Image 1: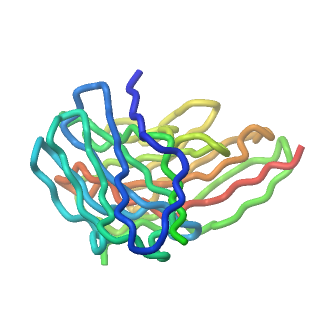
Image 2 (image 1 turned 30 degrees about the horizontal axis):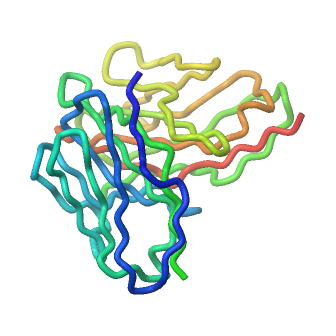
Length: 114
Length: 113
C-alpha cells in the first residue's frame, strides 16, 4: 500500500512565525501535491510538483512556498503565518501513467495560527 | 470557469435508506472522474474511479457511480446506507490532458442508526 506521511498532525503557531509542513511518500510517485481543506470550500490546490526541484502554483499559492529536493519529500512553507492560514493541510501523491489522477493522501496537518 | 459542482452539501439519512449524491462538471472532452471519502478522523481515500469503458462503476463498500456524458454527471449511489457510511464525500475531475484533479466542495453525510 502507498503510504503518505505528514510529519505533524497538529500544530499551533503564532502570527508571523515560519512554519514547515513535511510530507514523505514511499511509492516512488512522480507527482506530489499540497491542498488545504476548509469547511464548505472543499480541497483547494496550493502547489504541486511533478519532479524533483520542479514546482507549479495551484489555485491559492499566495503566502506559501514549497520545496522538493528529493523525489519522496515535498515540503510546504509558510514564510510568515497569518490567522487566515489556519486550516487542515493535506499532502497527496500520484503516479504519471495511463491512469493518472488518482491521489493518495496523507492524514493531514491541522494548523492553528494564533 | 471550469468547475466541479456537488449539489448536496449536507445529507442526513436513516440506516437502510438509499443514497444518491450529485456531481456535475463543466469540462468538455475526455475526463477522468473520482469519488473520494473521508471518514471521521481518517485520511481521504479513493471510493471509485472512472477512466473509460462501462459507465457504471462499482467501488468499495457497496458504492457505485454512473457516468452520464450527455449530462456531464457522475453521481454516487448506494442502495442501503449504514451508520458507518457517515463521512464526507468529494467528487473530483481531471480535465482533459491533466493529471491534476479539481475537487467539488464536498458533501457531508450523516447516517442515523
